[in-house]
Length: 510
View 1 (cartoon, helix red, strand yellow):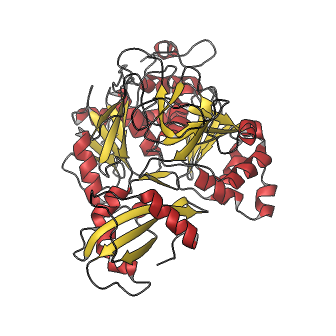
View 2 (cartoon, one colour; view 1 turned 180 degrees about the vertical axis):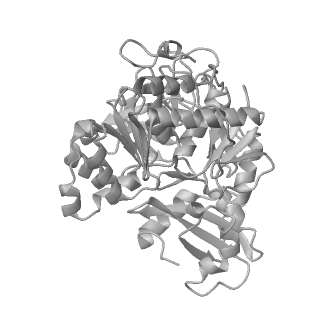
View 3 (cartoon, helix red, strand yellow; view 1 turned 90 degrees about the vertical axis):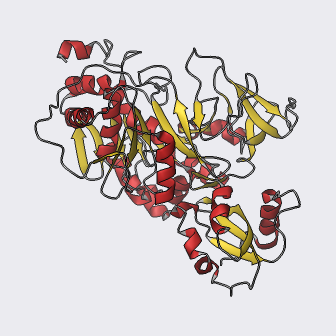
């Protein structure tokens, strides 16, 4: 496309226009910004022109392989420039990207790929084998591919994200909003033309919002290949980011560095520290508030489904410690009891959101799971309460789910793997407090035979644990001959957890 045509996707101030395809916006900024740095990742720095040229060449290769409008493409690799180029390459063809974790074991990977039913899988040399069209970014692209901008195309749905289901089965969350610029992409906390720093894996929603999307509004994005607290401080000093995103585990690891290291770091460029994904320990929250200022610490409670959200700044949190904030503009929180009746402030129930309709075709969809929609209300499944001032508090992050270092882990999947052992009658997995990860996984295993000697539990179940991704593997195990489930087959994980926290302050290491 010509430079004048690309320029029409930007307004007079150089910001993206509503309705502009994301793939075309990257080309527009490549034309506008040229050699200005767009992406810093690991030891690589790519300009807008270089980033867009690589995405254009990859898009043409995908097109030659049969990928086009309306298709789906799985992206599976660690944080690297090619991950981001693959996202934009698919958008440039009108195809929906589905980024998934590269840490999945083979069975998990195959299950999710089957659910997505993609035209292609884009990965690297470590990606599991697949019968789908596979594009290995470690291999050079064919010669002769043009790096010029492609004709405009719009992907709808705009993206598909993978997540574990509450039953332990994986599910897909379909974002039906097209891959065009609009209110759902913009953020007052991340204005155009700034520098952002991302520390999380690119297949998650928050890094998508703070690393992949900023490139479509002319911002420089700095992305860590793997989180390291000292390196994070160094990147802040070198690149002076306006906005950063962290999960509480990362916040904790930075805060617990030696005082002389954290005090020497210049964090004055940070205007917004955006954190989400898990509860933040109060002492860690206070450390950050004192270190960079309460007005700069912003916590968000919400989800990929975008059914509603709450926001809370540090100064509000100090007045309402433990809260995740009040609903965003236009959203309404309704707390329901088990019978679906609304509860008054101060009473605990399931948290539901009511969000005004934003037009047809804007409601998320699931593959592999059922929604929790009740009329015009929807829920993430968490329970909590609202105080008299309208501030929301989370009582439990779902009945079963455990949040480990910002990652959602569902016990049913782990229990099913452990119960494949011939001597295991039953298993319950719970989360116990952990200063670093927020929660650590602990398995309570009902055996038919002899209990292994102390310290041998993880080895006893080694074959079963290898069926799970590393972050889903329990850190400690206890064995029992007592019954874990009642006659109805139910397990009271909240009670199991409370007993262990009360008696031992957590689980004794196995």
